[in-house]
Length: 309
Image (cartoon, rainbow, N blue to C red; front, side, top):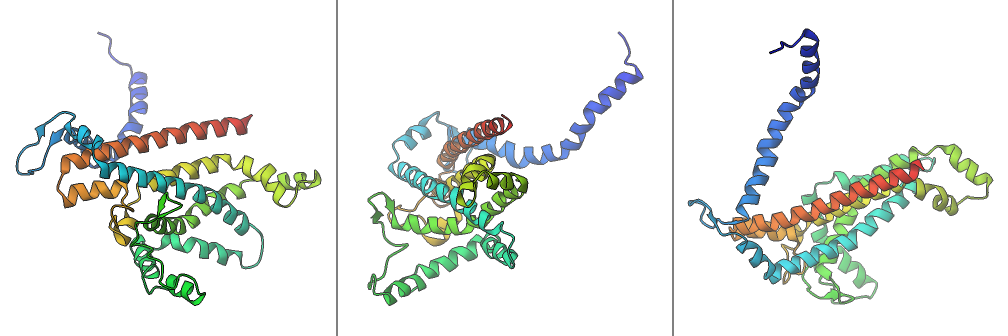
């Protein structure tokens, strides 16, 4: 058997060194992320109502129960409505804000700070503040009453009625908080992209007659496609996982009209103590987020390839 030469040992050390640096992080991830995820996957095929007893294997019974669960389908519908209602606004509006604050005007830094302030505010504080605004005698209802509109007030968080027969008022009210919190965050992402565009490109476009709003249609939006794709997928994943706003403001009510899939998972796990059933819901949520992540990779790759061409 041939012995390894000193050169071979050097090559082995060079290949192993990066993994040695990664080992502590991999151990932490394994203990806090991967192992709990594998346990949750296993529990989704078991019955674990009594935590003092070992889980009992029941196969796909939890998935059959989930298929027949009307509340689950309602929460899934609410999550989809949240996704459709929030993502387009968080993709378009922050881009407009980024273009606005990217102007070289006096005091523009103050505007950037003002738009970004909601991002650094705790969601608990923001949720409580907005809950006061939405109250029966809150600022919003008082404002409409002063204008002679809706004298009885609008039940922002307590009405199961639907706007246009589709979107529950309570869910729309919670969505407004998510949009308010996210505008500044995504604005900064767009701002970084805008500042990477050379000024010469806009000057050349101005010579060709592309100025004003047209320059953004001809130059800004095409060059910002990777950032648009990134914001679209990040905001979609965030909207799918929304929890704090619902927990603080509505507790999923009234009549489950604002209950999302993550809140339903929390309710099953920590209120009803249906641990296995909650793991089944979590597995479905994982598959949804995995699909959105794969979509992000595909869109980002296509956008990068188009820019290279």
